[in-house]
Image (cartoon, rainbow, N blue to C red; front, side, top):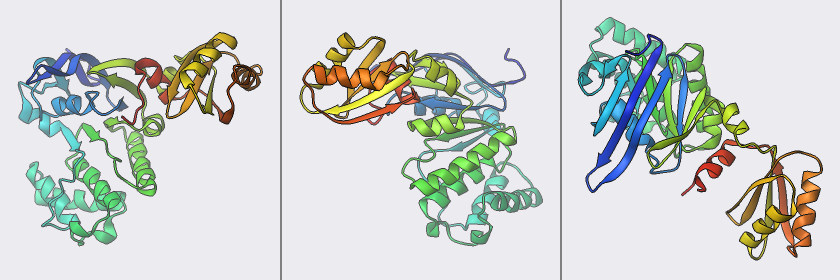
Amino acid sequence: MPAAADAIVTTDLTKIYPGGITAVDGMSLTVPQGEIFGLLGPNGAGKTTTASMLTTRVIPTSGEALVGGVDVVRHPAVAKQLIGVVPQTNTLDRSLTVWENLYFHGRFFGMGARDSRRAADELLEQFRLSERAQAPVMALSGGLAQRLMVARALLHRPAILFLDEPTAGLDPQSRIGLWDIIAGLRQSGQTVVLTTHYMEEADQLCDRIGIMDHGRILALGTPGELKQSVGADTIVTLASEGDLEGLASALRERVDGVDATTVMDGTVQVAVRGTDRVLVRVIDAAEGAGYELRDVGVAAPSLETVFINLTGKDLRD
C-alpha cells in the first residue's frame, strides 16, 4: 500500500494501442502529496497518455495506478472525485457565462448550491476573473479561458490537479500569468502533475521532473539534479557554415574536457568540463580546423542539454 503522503503511485503502468504502438512502457513512479511534478518530453513521448490513464480517460493495458490511494481502473468514479483536469483543448461550456461555468461544475461534482456559489466567487477573485463573471465564455481570450479552466478544475477541491500542456499556444504574457497561478498553488500545498514540452516551464515550476521519451522515464529528479547530471560545466554553442558534423568531430579531438557534442538547428553544442579559458580553447580549435564562426554563445547546462544528451532529439520535433 502507498504511504499516506503519496498522491500518485504507478507500478509497471503500460499502454499499448491497437497496431502494437506502445505509448507508455512499464512506468513505475511515485509522486508525494504537495509536489508539483512535471513530465517533460517531445510530442509522442507518452506524457498525455500517462496523464490520461491517471485521470481514468484511458484504460491501461497492464500495470497499476493509484491516485490518492484509489485504483483508477477498479474504482474510476471514486478516483474522479479526487482529481481536477485541465486538458489541452478548451472544454468550457460556451452557452454559459464565466461564473456559471464554475458554479455548475461544483453542482456536477455534488456540491450544494451555497457551497458551489461561494467557491465560484472565491475562485473568480483568486484568478482575477471577477470583473468578467457575467461575460460569455466566447468573449475570453485564450489566456483568460485557460485561467478559467484551471479555476474550474480546482472548484471541487481535488487532491490532485492535472495540467496537460497548459500553456500551449498562449502568448508570452498569458504564459507568464499562468505560471504565477501555478506557482501559487504550491504555496497552498496543492499536488500538481504538469505535462509540458517547454523547458523553461518545467524548470520554473516543478519540484521534480521526469524526462520521457518512447513511453519511458529516462531521468528523474529536481531541475538542479538533472542539470548537474550532465557532468559538464559549460555549454558552448557555435554557428558556422560547412560540415557541422566535421566541426563537432574536430572539437572532440582538439579540446580537452569535451563530454559531448550535438549538431542541431545549424549549430554545434559542445559540453565541456571545467571553466578555464573554455571559450578561447573552443574557438581556437574550431578556427584551427578551418571553420569560420558566425556566432558563439556560452551558457550553463540546461534541461534542454539534459534532454538532448539522453535522446539526441530537438524538443520541437
